[in-house]
Image (tube, rainbow, N blue to C red):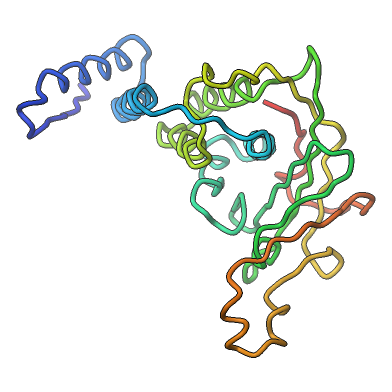
Length: 258
């Protein structure tokens, strides 16, 4: 028999703690969740209930939808657990995904040209001995056959819950919280917008042929001047560039909005 022990030292909150335990037990008994997963889901639901809803900008939604497309593609080739563990989006890392032998940076736009904003001089700089790949995605409003932002989030959450650990689903919620998205769709009055992929993804290896800036830009400056530059954002247009003919396994999967 599997058992889990939860306790509190705050006697004045015993009644509320009892309600929390009942909610956890319901998820274990009625939904078949593991105890740690049931606890994580319950805490997240209570937090969402009490948090002040904050709207997410269209730009952030589109960016996250692109990351969910990539997450789903990685899951198709490596499984959902590996896909979740590779997703670095909520931890302020330089690159969006880190697979065992390479990294992936995803850029998504709704414009007709592949014009992307690069944040910092490290975002398109490969880590030591780790190839970096840039994936350029274009979304367009998709009509009745498209997918809404909330549908994409719900679909990925369901798959993480079913095929990965409870911690993996919590990582998605952390990513949402990091970009100020409430966990309920009721606060997104414009979320009936449906999206689809405008074109096939463009996969580029980050090398000397890719237009980019890196820290070598600052080497020509006096050290005291370079030290005063803390952030460099710039745009690149990769429209018309030929995609890399050879690409790793995760970037050979089908790309679609989940």
